[in-house]
Image (cartoon, rainbow, N blue to C red; front, side):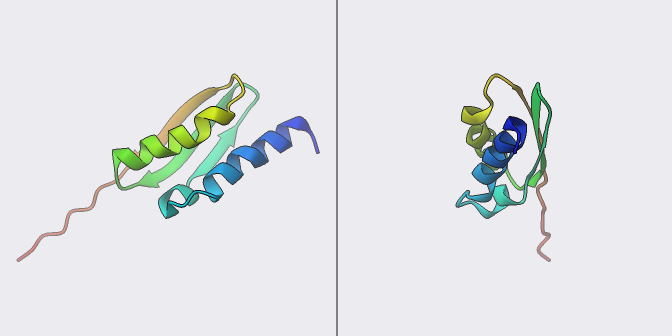
Length: 77
């Protein structure tokens, strides 16, 4: 297994092992220079948590947080 594959596993495991279900649904796209987090969450707080989960594992790569915050509103009639 190459170093890159090991690193991908570490990053993916960090999200997969999160106690927060919304973070476990996010995906990662990685290259030698960048890591991109993608997916949808329901708050900016969850978007920040996803970023903070990955930051310590970047090893000098740039993080692109492309997570979308999607809020749903329900009307009460």
